[in-house]
Length: 122
Image 1 (cartoon, one colour):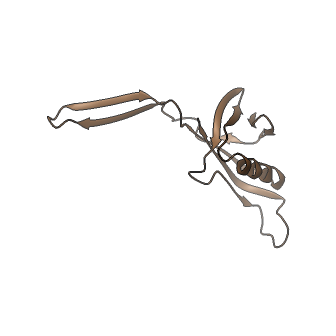
Image 2: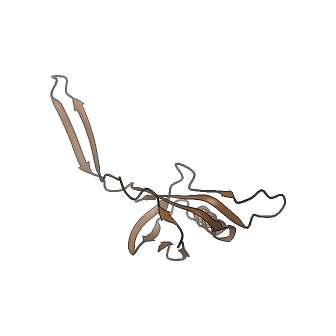
Image 3: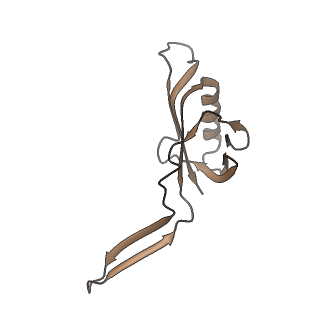
């Protein structure tokens, strides 16, 4: 189960980029004398977390949009399968996105598809 800020449950969401993350930052450069300089250190923060879902209600999507708008620069807890991550919404890209299931004119859609939520660990 995934829970945003101890209040919004996301039972159908999947952690898209869970695997393949490296907690090490590395840079290789050469000195003016030609020696190889290797710098490596543990990354202390900044892990991107992307959650995706194929199909959700518009009500849940709106709740997530409202949470993102109300917490622009606020840290909160993202719980994924019992593990807590301290995160912020990642506004360096679009923090929350989705597509209405079908076209609509004057009313809100009932469902959203291709939903992506972007967080960054702090």
